[in-house]
Image 1 (tube, rainbow, N blue to C red):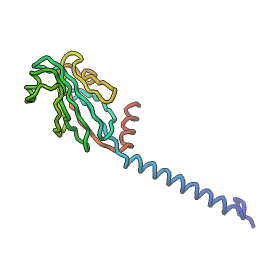
Image 2: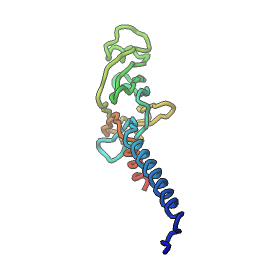
Image 3: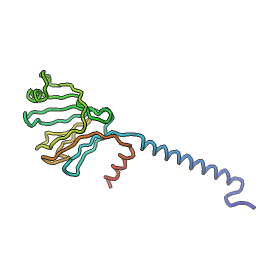
Image 4: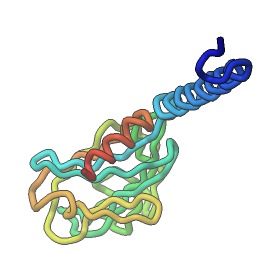
Length: 174
């Protein structure tokens, strides 16, 4: 009596299916592991008064800048930062304004003042006009894209699994 499935050769077909299933399971587990263990670093520019935010994927040691017109001295300034181990570090301030230099406590009049100050989240208030924003690589994001005049904006860095980041991004698009 012959079994359904092909007699002598049925065992080889079954072994092939089991091997393919094991390969598929291994790939699935490997992909899941990568999505869970691969971490991504994100800069969040969040409006604390309205449900708006901008998210920028950065490398763990990327530099970025905040530019603004100083409210007291009505002069431009650029603060340069670096992401370091999941935190934001102020690396320097660039300005030509002697008033802003004095405000920061700088004693010389060089246009760039190096610093190394580790910070947590950074908070801003949106001012009028396009004089405030974030520059990451070649991308410029104005605070007015995230909030309206007077809104409180928080800039923070977060590290999360690649899978979580991709899932959140996908759910936002739906």
